[in-house]
Length: 513
Image (cartoon, rainbow, N blue to C red; front, top):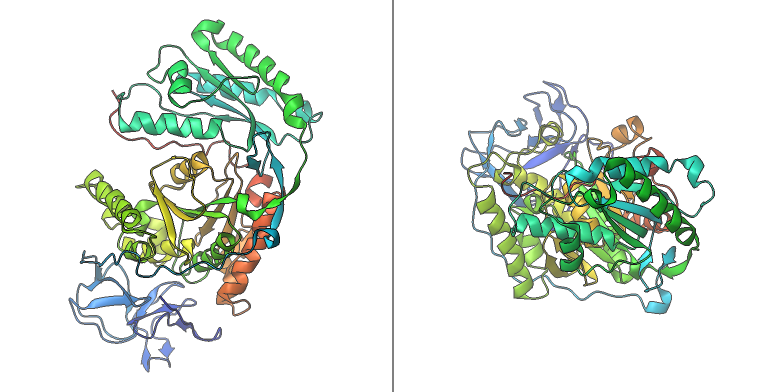
């Protein structure tokens, strides 16, 4: 898919020569002249929204990025605002074209790859941060782990400057659920993914004792190995709430000296696994931030790293962009199988997978899920799709991969981190306030006005592409350099604000009984 844009002084953006809609670069008032179209605009149009470049008759396809995003639900006149009020979402056959767009990757030689200052664990895993984590097997032990973590204030951790913090990953499930079940498997897999994450120097798992998700069976089924850096407590065995808090504090105090005994050393960018997220999108996300992040991921893959695209509902309608890049028909089919699962899972529900995007996305100019998906898929760049994983499955392939997840950002990011992501890149057009631990989040703004308004929360202004100051490729290079800096320990904006303590949200599926 190729895109072109008008000069920065023009008010309309043409993304492809075959498009019959244009994108407003800035607010356009009712009756304003549009010299590009030879008409006056027929309604006020907000920045990022679409304007008809020609008459579009009822039932005719609406094209953006030379891709059908719906059909006109009534006759649309040139110069008219085009949005959810006059676009109907219809499903249509899409040829998966397995493997047709696979192109070989021009890998950088191992001795010439970019490096960052990482933390190498004893078993060879590489970390970008150095936390001690506390996990709850069930909601009933969540208060206890929070109290343990709260004890370790900055003052108490001052003697351990190499420890980034003690963080509690509280959760709201673990009981009142079917077991065995897919939900149960997902929860255990997610907890285990955090327990073995390289960004956690040591881990404490706390359970209640009578929950479905028993600590002993969690440890056994997930092949976790308790030792001095992986401890477990069960509240009903340790004497209750206060006794467990006291014993938890003592256990972490014993872990701190070894956790602090680390140093950062140069390591290859091949050790980076980047979770790709987008939230609060707008009509510019698919023009600036998402393709620029995709360009950065192409660089990362060339250097041996891993890019993890997720949010399955947000590739609905454009999955062919990925299946055509699958390295085998089996990989492409696995992606289609996950989409088929989602179609059944959401049947009869008013969910995003079925076409309705959130209010923020609509206000930002995105009419439906197909249009949002077009931008979302760009985050993955252009390299071959190497593998498809289920939620929170350990990622064992390098390159561009896909992990199944909901589009809800905390749930998707939680799954990516559980799968091994050691950094998250998060694009936004509306201004999502998001952070994550133990893997930090870099936030990329799609437009300059939002970046300027929310600069305390945004790390990178991809609106410079729209402003004509940088190309997509140049912004991709800037993002890649920023990734290396953050992976080396430079604080992201969300870290400076203290975000990430409440964004551990494992995917809830199935009944609660």
